[in-house]
Image 1 (cartoon, rainbow, N blue to C red):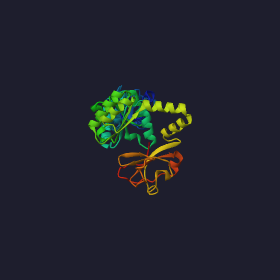
Image 2 (tube, rainbow, N blue to C red):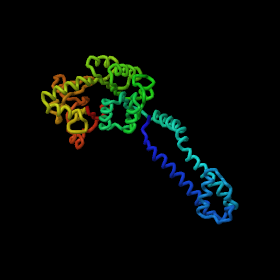
Image 3 (cartoon, rainbow, N blue to C red):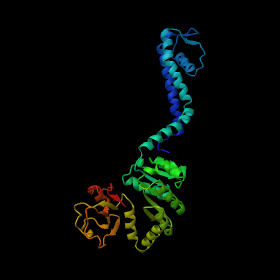
Image 4 (cartoon, helix red, strand yellow):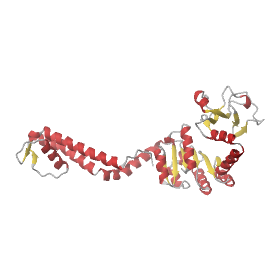
Length: 348
């Protein structure tokens, strides 16, 4: 299901009525302008009423024959202009039926065009509370709606995704044929936010079997199921129940700390966690000496906390996880340097 504007039924009917009236008026004007070439069986001159009468019975194919074109010019106009208008008028009247017949062809054409163009997109399996929040964060982070595909079994959720400009696939995200419709083999990222842990594990196994290149981020309710997701091929696993429980505990002990944590987790407002490449200003410094608070240093495949002695000093190929205010992020952006990974500074 590709996003598109869906007009209301009243507007669809009104549009067809207005178009039919426009064709009728145009036909009547043409008849009136060439009224000298028409003859009324009653002997009366051709006026506006007769012109509209002739246009109505002609466009509706009733054709009583009491008003007929008699001159060559009038017959030529009827052949070249009025007859096409009659066809258009009939098409408008049966427009609803034709629209239903052509809708599938139009959808197939749009889907084929989308499949030929989509590359390096993000597939979100499950568009519930977690999935929609993940999509909202991606959109705020600069991802375009066209680069996100949502998979869910609920057509109402897919319709909601379409209203946000997202492409949607109705189906079970743990089935290969459904994921293939989402062009999973071309995806760069896959977010699995299923409502059940067993569904998340099965979806992760299916995704990893279909693609080895995509980064898989999966959520799980119970911590004991997190190893299963990692063994199934998930790159990163988020335990929702434990995370929520820990945040509740922090809020109980220190509500202010809880507010700061929630601020860090809410992208686009207040403080943000950013994953950015190190630049020339950072090289040779210890993490504590960097202007922005550094929480971790990513070196190769290792993620080290800021106090890890193995860091030593920051290297040019490192990536830094820093805390930054939204105001500073917008007014003083960090220059992006190509590190070979193709990744710009990324909010965490």
